[in-house]
Amino acid sequence: MTTSGTTTFNLQIDELIEEAFERCGMQMTYGHQLNSARRSLNLLFLDWANRGLNLWTIEQATYPLTNATNEITLSSDTVNVLSAVIRDNSQSPSVDITIDRISREEYLNIPDKTTVARPAQYYVQRANVFKVFLYPAAQSTFYTFVYYRIRRIQDAGAYTNTADVNFRFLPCLASGLAYFLSLKYAPDRTVALKQIYEEDFTRAAQEDRDTASVSFVPDLGV
Image 1 (cartoon, rainbow, N blue to C red):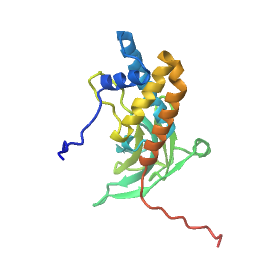
Image 2: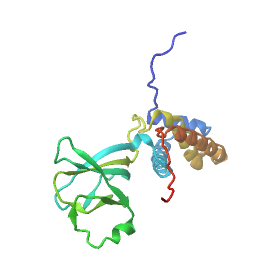
Image 3: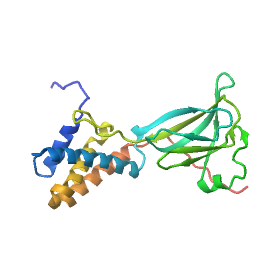
Image 4: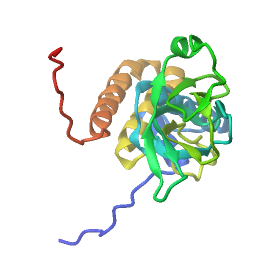
């Protein structure tokens, strides 16, 4: 038996929309339906950002610090910062030093936020302008803020694009878009399509996880 020898199957945005409409029991016949479906697809991507980690959207980024820096603005497509270190480039090889994330209240209660030393803590302000506040402020230009961030899933864009998702999420993407479209065009199928979508998402999300081993040590209070 001959197989294709390829593992590159993907769907363009227009093909994904066509699949979703077919699941709604209809064919797309009007131009405004295409625009409506793309809008729903972009809203679906935003919904996924609220559902938790999508591993393919996690990436490492760096921000060189200047002297006395205690506030930095990150890229506008940042959803959250997962972890961070301060990289000391004053020696070779460079050394990464752990830095702790603190809450807004903890940062607010720091008396003198202009203290200069090697940063040991950071507070993440998740607002329209995504900022990180460092304490103490960087005392040297040899420091770099190195962090893992969650970025936004890219917009659908042109209909000939493919979606910015891992291949494991394609079935979930099709069922999710079908559910979103059913709210507007096929309300009689909404309940069934929502159930399929949630099952597909749960299955994909369970697979999309870090499988590294972890151990827990009890605190005996000694």
